[in-house]
Image (cartoon, rainbow, N blue to C red; front, side, top):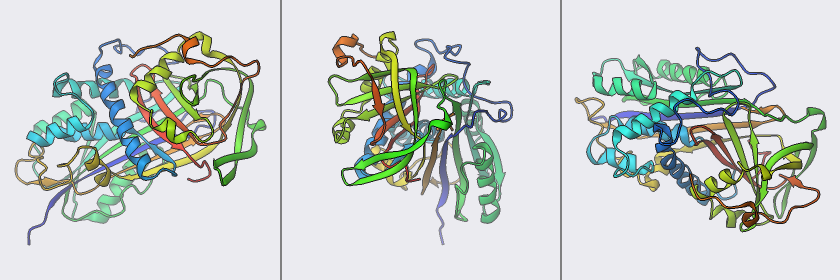
Length: 427
């Protein structure tokens, strides 16, 4: 009886909470550069900045598909983790399968060559993994390979060179032992926050690719724990829940009230090279705002919130919460243009020349914790008078209804995490 030869793609992302201190850097690797300074080599036109538009495009296409299928659920994922894993896998794809994967990731192959794309990820991952005393970040990949299968040296060398992947040879006939090996590795790399990523392996699996993101950061302006109290959060017109609400009323923040869109946007900086954008739709305007959530809109808000006149004193009320997301990518990605990836038509002859590989399943898990101490997850600009409403004498911002969140690496302009908080009491 013929058995399909399987490779399995697994992705884990973690935005982990911090209680005021950072864990020691993992194996000498840490995060990005020190507080809000430019990473060397991330000037305009650098390899990582060249792939940033494609990565953002993919992130929002992925988001809109999930949101359309589950409009009333929390959303949280790491587009960087998914994009890096798929780009790495494309090193072993050939012919139309490879082209389809790179185009599905949002890259225009008439403007970027295959080497530009992989060089961009190499530069991006190197910069994100630079050691830092202030920000703990570790982005990595691992390949678990059947110990008896001859993998092509070019594929193994390139995955290591471009994606800093670690290689493990294992006996996939021992499904229990291999499952434990993979889960222990992911648990270790995410500081124990993501466990049991793999629950059941098929005995005909030949390769497992795992990608993970660990991010732990402190707010530049932390909240006082003594001031956190339970307040109402309005999930929808008929549902209200109680959440621990953090408060600041004597700090300056970067924020704007959009004059042409029904929302407010808050920028909160972490210590280190990372920033969060929290987008709060006006009451009842979630769907309307969601429809215009585009890469251009993110760039516009981000550019505007670099201007000093948006840095003002604000009374801020923000929920303390934990959410997570789990996604079956083999059901989602074909709807985003990856038609061959999980079908018998897939051509992965660049991985091994002896057997026809197929990717039957792929999973992505991500978690987000936000507390008082911090978080453990170029375009046209215009003047402030055009985009802002009239200034108020007493500015108050209540995040007590559903909102969007975007976690960015400043120097590489990369979206690390993206999501929507509909009900902060739902894990």
